[in-house]
Length: 196
Image 1 (spheres, helix red, strand yellow):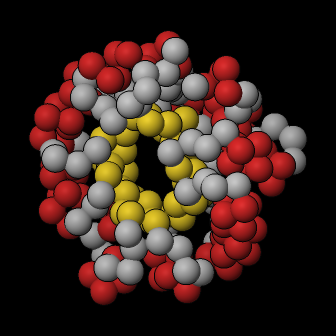
Image 2 (tube, rainbow, N blue to C red):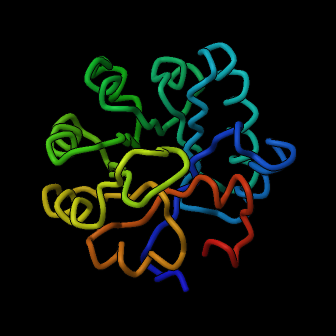
């Protein structure tokens, strides 16, 4: 059972999506996760913008929060109010651009990253990868101890990422996580009983 105060964010990945991608996004949006991060790192900016327009419309029509990724200036042009950035990009984005967003997230892989993201003005961060995952095959997971250290080092919500399954929610919550990011569970399943 998902603890009531534990939030779930969907992270998209077209390359592992079962079936039609936009139909999958619609199914996820109808589940009302805390947010849907439109990650799709393999897309160039123009392709990403075309996809983002469709996904933002689906999210808006179904009461789901769409969080764009990577392309901050394009996100501003699209009227997005939420952005998620890798640290290397977050460090280079002009403060005037960042000020356009109500929600700013960052992908953090160390306590130093987490502290820097908070100082820059992020409203939440992701920390990982926590458990072994196909997305990071062959790379040792950082584990729950790392997550606990990150959670203790910042005053903004921390979302665990990497190999997350529902059975791990209690452990992540005890470590101080506000929630978790799930990719495969949404892209390959997305049934409420599978995740929530």
